[in-house]
Length: 242
Image 1 (tube, one colour):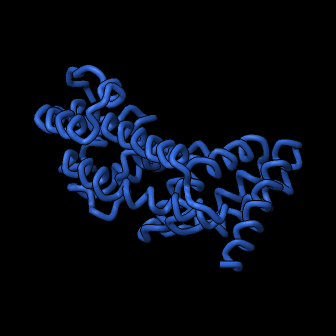
Image 2: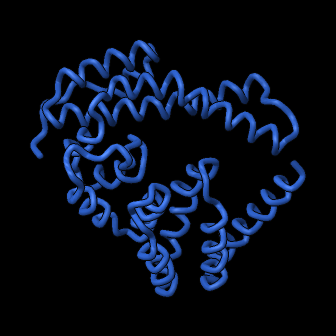
């Protein structure tokens, strides 16, 4: 437990120093820090951090500093996309480098049906790349049973995510969540589920799969019968041209 806390403090401090260096224009220090943090934050506990905060910071750095672009491009190009973890890193760095066209081209070269090991989270890196390239119908190819996937995420993965977050809070603060914190955390996860449902519905509608879209809407509203879910799903859309 003590070692975990020390490692967390060291890693967090290293990240804060890199962010501060980036803000001050000390790009060499920022590059060194972000390379180290990128290397030190592997594993499921860090997935959200790497895909949101750290990727955003790296994108800012590489847009301001040519050496950083070259360094992170080298990290990306050394990855083996046949390995699941390396593939996720490759997709993340494509996004940070503003080169997610590579991710879409890679997707286009995959066999059909898309192999099961391909990352397919509705809020994940490959899906974000496809959305930016307006490839909604292709997102549906990643989800042969979207209603079942949404139900599984809501009933199994969401509670597991909550438990990981609760445990992380307890380790960091030495106490349990209070009622307000618990509800706020649960609502954040529910909002994530609503976004997932909205992406899946739009993808199925774009792909000309109205039956799947209808089942998704029904499942989503059974899982979360709130006005927030109805707003997230939006009106039924006509089929979009690819």
